[in-house]
Image 1 (spheres, rainbow, N blue to C red):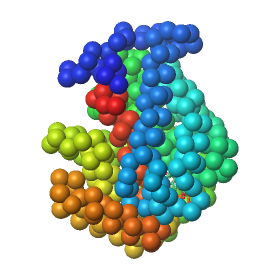
Image 2 (image 1 turned 90 degrees about the horizontal axis):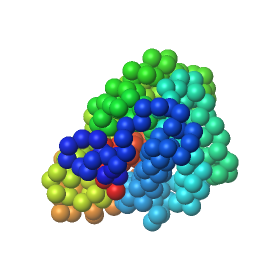
Image 3 (image 1 turned 30 degrees about the vertical axis):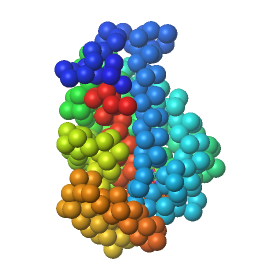
Image 4 (image 1 turned 90 degrees about the vertical axis):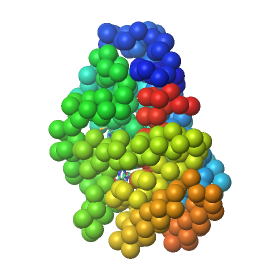
Length: 306
Ligand SMILES: CC(C)(COP(=O)(O)OP(=O)(O)OC[C@H]1O[C@@H](n2cnc3c(N)ncnc32)[C@H](O)[C@@H]1O)[C@@H](O)C(=O)NCCC(=O)NCCS
Ligand SMILES: Nc1ncnc2c1ncn2[C@@H]1O[C@H](COP(=O)(O)OP(=O)(O)OP(=O)(O)O)[C@@H](O)[C@H]1O
């Protein structure tokens, strides 16, 4: 939202920087800020879900490669996470420890699973967007401009050491752990430990480039998604498709980008063809989808986008 933006080209912030953590408990500017960021985080979940066509992924149009979840499952999960985002922004403002953020994340996962009947819709989003929300809150409390470079630096400076050491204690037998062991794939934990370089260095720049070239938000988000698919090591893809599946995802994404991505007049037909072929092969780049959502959140916080 425009009023969040702390730098030159958008509207001035509506609130004075929050200095005192005690603001968070009352109805002061701190609480209003947390509520606004939480709203943007939930909106980023919706933006990711609503985008179509996303190869193999669930959207409002169809379920892609998935038989166990649909848009309604994602909507239930989304509503269950609102309070989590509010709490984790506040925790970031109050200088919370990594242990405290992790506790909030684990609690949110449990709430998500209750809302979906045990289906994992947003584990990656809870992890990545939760940490970003904490860093955004911390920046705000310290009067640091809400710019991507500052948010990433804040995340690493405050929780980077523990993120680097965060290995096998949560979900010792997850699909991500399995993909790392079988294929030496990296995944959400490694992304987190490095301060989500794919979000800040790949997805967000791709989205901004497309917008600067005059394309609409939908096209810019598609460009960001394909840039992420071409770049990351997605443990969801490894889990479902092995190394062959991971190679196929990267190849298709690179071919889409090489043809000009959404600048090409026939981009939609080609994105749809990818969606059909991924769905037939049961491939689902869920990690890229999570990171795209994080890009949407950062764009709305830093650039004042809807
Ligand atoms: C680190 C987490 C995400 C575990 O990851 P792990 O790879 O073991 O689990 P899993 O296979 O279930 O995957 C988790 C998610 O990562 C996403 N993902 C896959 N690949 C990637 C990637 N390269 N980059 C980012 N996300 C990815 C997937 O979409 C999936 O939703 C997490 O469950 C965790 O530690 N949670 C603890 C609480 C928490 O969220 N804390 C937040 C603040 S510290
Ligand atoms: N729009 C989306 N469609 C599908 N998956 C998504 C979407 N957005 C994010 N994801 C991520 O992809 C993952 C879902 O994929 P998948 O069903 O393979 O997960 P899983 O629970 O690890 O595996 P399985 O369902 O095979 O047990 C979720 O963790 C979710 O974070």
